[in-house]
Length: 490
Image (cartoon, rainbow, N blue to C red; front, side):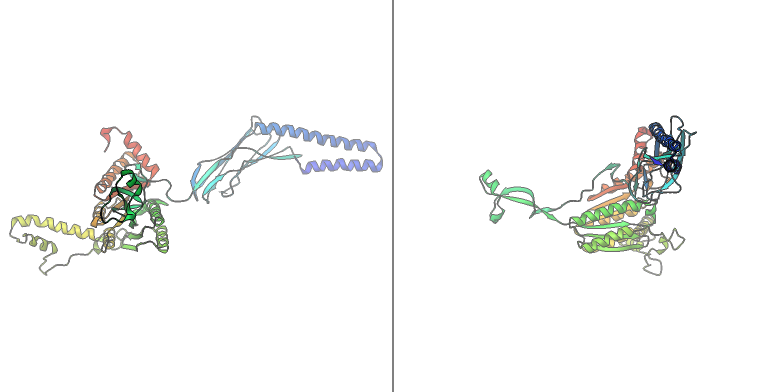
């Protein structure tokens, strides 16, 4: 208990009377000083009992509207106090906001002797990521002469997560998988550490290859073969065209794909595998680094991925569209003899008077136009350039979305050439659109279309296709689709 100025004034009066009584030798004044002192002691006892009853009956709660927020978000925080009955004491309560929180106003309230309950809500901003625990509210009670402060009430915790993807799902058809990135078998026998097979000793085998334990067990010389191991050259191809900007701030398709790309590059670097990077914008390749194992190169890849932003589609911005910039096959002759005509003539369809040739000619022209269009697409062009040299043993990992299925199929076919493997990490657009889940049934049907595309890619030899997206939104779509009657599913 701490005395207030009023009590100090009363105590000073008692001391003054006692002093005067001693100086003037008047016992009556000394008795008055004793009465004032007794009143002070009684006041203290009464305050202590009232304070004890008030604290026992007081319920103080502080709570945030959400226990999980993002950095920079503003969330209402409420402080409330309740008494079973009004207390003769005046009670002031101060909320225990964490140091990292910033409130628009003071989180405090008061209960006067005529009030038994009150509530106050203020907006609180959370600029710093982490787990922030509230302090217990501070309760100050006074009767005008004495004052006491105690800590009382709830102390919740608010988790502030940094901006960006939260729970990232990587899997197949809603089933989450772990992207294993371990030792890579070379597909042949040789030196290594993994036992592959045991065979009998043959002339020409050196003595150091004999497995003496197996020889003793089998009574004849045997040689242990080991699985040869090799590094895997990895090329990350990250699409950051305008369509990859789909999504809420800091939760776009590119944000999720970036996190997976960073994890993949870090794992390859940790295992000592050569890793390279191509980033592709609407105008073409924006960054190029061939696979290497140097730490400097890995740092460049990491910085580039962290700085990556979606580019602007010129055709969407009112500039020169992509179609108008595409290369056209020049006429072979001034008479309009095109490459499609040359192809048709080579297989015997060059006679304009031939009805059969006239029927098939449009199909060859359409095929030539399709090939020309695909070859001019940025993602296909980037992979074609990366695979123009010696690409044996190159593992290509594509990070893109499902907005261009034709280009994606042709790109995957190109990347898996020469016996190479391809991993496709696809962002389903429907999971990122801010209003994409407004109609959950429609969202499920669109996800089924995406799944058909992913499975088509996965059916190709040496191709693995996985989906990348927010776990919570995918769970919402799948739970609705699986709950629908079988006849209503897409």
